[in-house]
Image (cartoon, rainbow, N blue to C red; front, side):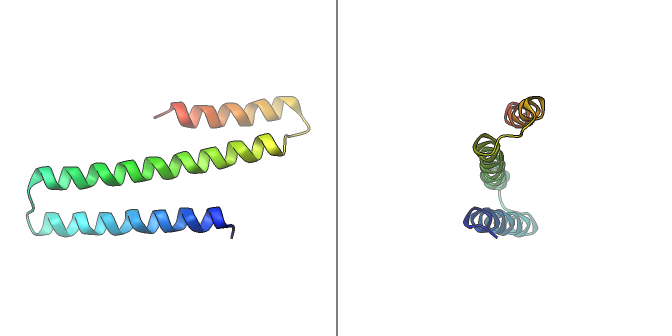
Length: 86
């Protein structure tokens, strides 16, 4: 497991903890605005994790290009599509 992987796992665990907190807020009938604010924070966190994964993949693709040019272009396009898909 690389340092990057450990960092991503830690971010995912944090998001998981946030989701558990939101579940508790709902069970305790917290204000809607507070729940939505926390959900927005989790969404931002997950978006950031996705961005880091795509960026790392793209960086790896550029540092270690495929021998086949078409394959390389396809990998780059897939990364771009993941970014733009949002």
